[in-house]
Amino acid sequence: MKVVIIRHGEPDNPNNTLTKHGFKEVEALSEYLKDFKFDDVYVSPLPRAQLTAKGVLDPLNIKFTTIPWLQEFDHRVNVPYTDKKVINWDFLPKFFTEQDDFYDETKYLDHNVLKTGDVKKYYYEVTKGIDEILAKHGYHRKDKYYEVTNENKDNIVFFCHFGTMCVIMSHLLNIPYVVLAQTFVCLPTGITTLVTEEREKGIAQFRCMQFGNLTHLENKKIEPSFHARFCETYSSFDEKH
Image (cartoon, rainbow, N blue to C red; front, side):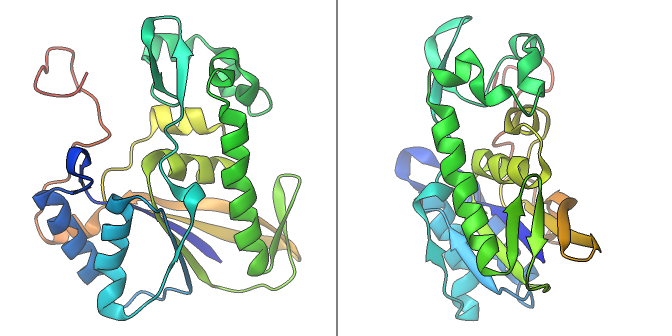
């Protein structure tokens, strides 16, 4: 079985839609996925994800289910280096790398910073929802792997957001989501694929087969969006700091 996570196109957040560039990205994505086998599709309720999903699925007459917990995982927390609350996975590098517990899969959700945003509760809302969907397809969570009662090669597809994607990957791969979000970046309309491996009968684990694939943009010679990235150098003042 494969879990495919697709990030929305470049957002125009003030107007709750996509940018002109974002719609071009979705058009390229739609063409790229026109022959893809969509077995089960779930979408964030936020307009940028809905527009992306509809741009891909409407031409194929494929229906999807909208799920509230797929919305952006942007719960805000307090940090010592600013009076402003920050998104729970958007930390300055020096602070982040000094927090040893952030790198510990058994401790990070109880970090004092994440507690200020009740992040643990929201994290488990997402992971509970993911496990319920996988169970419908015959994969049942046990400890850190999945018991298989109905092996299959279904494609379960999610159209959502970078933070939410990192939470899903965190759960399936048993890696702290803050580590994924701080050290990986999936640009708009990037395709991430996780596949089960059942090397022992009835016992499956997930592996990441591709992350943030942008072949559809490369094929059309469309420049990937910078959205979700930060400045490559400090002196790059035209880029987000």
